[in-house]
Image (cartoon, rainbow, N blue to C red):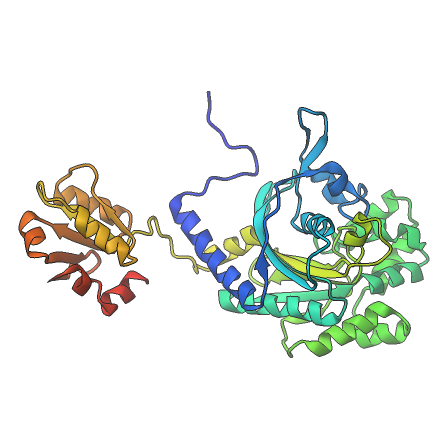
Length: 424
């Protein structure tokens, strides 16, 4: 049997997994600083939840990429394609939640789509959402989180902002009926990748006249938000955008982008997309979805919600390209090497109790082999425990980078200075 991975999936050896864990810590620290609490939902969802017209929607391109299957009872199931739909389902099932509900979720999502740079079939998303707040303050809060995250990571990005209400009005102004706006938006979402010709061709394939398609494209070109306010003076989307930008810090990374569509059916207001300026890929995206939760409940009362998903895989790709990730094969800080028959159990226990990540030779090898082993895993320190040292309670700690050695008790060896080096 030839051992192979399923297409679009990957193994993560320790040096990759450690880097991913460190990125996770950076993001979760920022999320929690903003008052977001963690949530976990199942990877498997019922297909009626995923395919509802106010969720993925059968006409949305994402539904073509859902991994579908049946359980033994014949129930139609699917792997979640994002974390927003499960959040809406969770809120709908827990009406006692106090609002606003600010949550972050970290989890794998699945899409059976094309594989290319920055896109996989199994990938992680890191979501932040605010449920229960209709005010643009919530959308501004999401964008503030975005700006802090990418500042912390040192990545140069452009945060593009638009509004689905404005986009729908422009489509209607081009002579296309409101009932067909959703399918047009799904196609417009490909403008950045397919270009104008590709979008016009797809709209023609969907039955629209070339003049209608060209009119839509033209309406999205080189206009400021003030221009759209004058063009559509009563449009709620333009007013929301004006208010949103007034709530944000003056930051050149945040730009109004009238062609930004976001192809999922559930967006109802502001939409966001974060693009890397170093690689031509999206690093995060989201928006407001005020109708989805209420629709799940069969209620006419909207439960407002807004949020954004960070693309964990493309963020890592950019960080690697820029050399901002240091590969570590181990998180061990001290490797204990018993000499001869010396019992190192007490020393190991004392180090671990002091909070030091400690490993110990389990193979009964000699010092030379143990030092080569520690070096292969990039462990910074080796501590030698001989019988004489054990009786005296003083041991030798060697810095495996410099070769410098210190002798002392366990507490002396893990002094403040040494711990600073251990935690680098």
